[in-house]
Image (cartoon, rainbow, N blue to C red; front, side, top):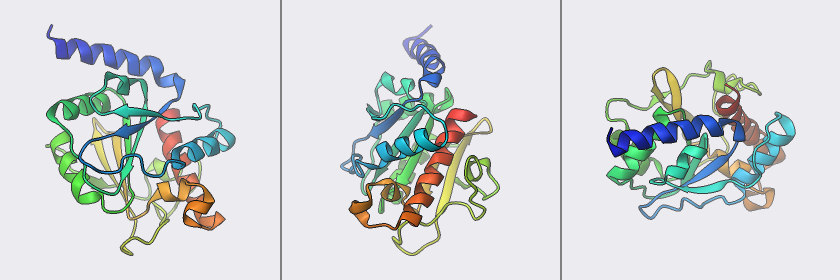
Length: 216
């Protein structure tokens, strides 16, 4: 049995073992994009979920590098930024194995990320394209109802918000939120001066995503 197969089996076991630990990781990637953007966003989302939907998430998300085997300890990974994204062949293989083994990646475009990240996703799953997720998908009614689908949080280019996904064996393994910017709505109120109503929309949609991963 070669080393890659052994690693895959071990990491798959780790993922299943840690699925009850309810931990979130922030994906650190190369290419020059600001993977560290929105530093208050995910901690605020975690606090909202623990207070409102019964999760017991660790309050501080971990930083996870794309090539690290530690990735498999985190059932949910969040990725954001404004700029370039580059995955090496080793990183692509590790991320692909993680998603196939039961992991979930949420990519939230913080504005300007789409042309870079979609190119990498073509290499990640060359036989599977991003597809728009309809408003009837359970992720939009998991804890809170969003009958029109993904909410619009920030203006960006004024286009409609889109929830795009990649499915593996009929399971949603990757969610790419575009022209919405949920993460900005999760941040501390003073960062973007969003109204409480806008922040609640962002946090509730984020809670739906978390619930979809941890409660299904």
